[in-house]
Image 1 (cartoon, rainbow, N blue to C red):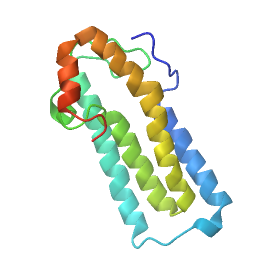
Image 2 (cartoon, rainbow, N blue to C red):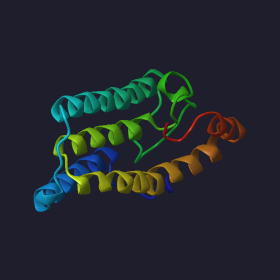
Image 3 (cartoon, helix red, strand yellow):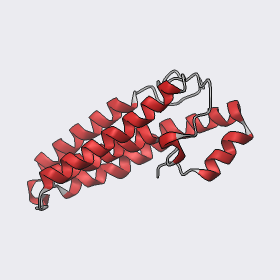
Image 4 (cartoon, helix red, strand yellow):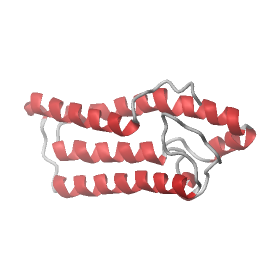
Length: 152
C-alpha cells in the first residue's frame, strides 16, 4: 500500500475544504441564501458525519487494523458494522460534516466544494487504497466491492 498518492491526511483535507468554503462564503455575500433552521440542520449533519466517521474508526480499531490511510497496513478485511453500508465511512463522515458546514454557511458557492472533496478523495485516497486492498485480499475484496457501495 506504499503507492498511495496522497500524503495529506484526510482530516486535513476536510479542514482545508471547510476553510475554503468559509473564505468563498465571505467573498461572495450576494450568493447567501436563507435556510430555515440552518443552524440546527447544520448541527445535526455535522453530528451525523462525526458519528459516521468515528464508527469507521472504532470498527477498524476493534478489528485491530490500521486507521492511518497514509501508512496502511491492513491486517484484515473489515466488512461488518458501518462497513456493511459503506466501504469508506470515514470519508463519508467528512463529506457529511462538510455538507453541514455548507448548510451553516448558507452560500451557494460553498456547496460547490462538496463535489471537489469527493473527486479529491476518490482520486488520491480511495482509488489507491482499493488497488492495494485488491492486491492484498484478491477475490474476497472484489466481491465486497460489488456488494457494498464506495460512498453510500
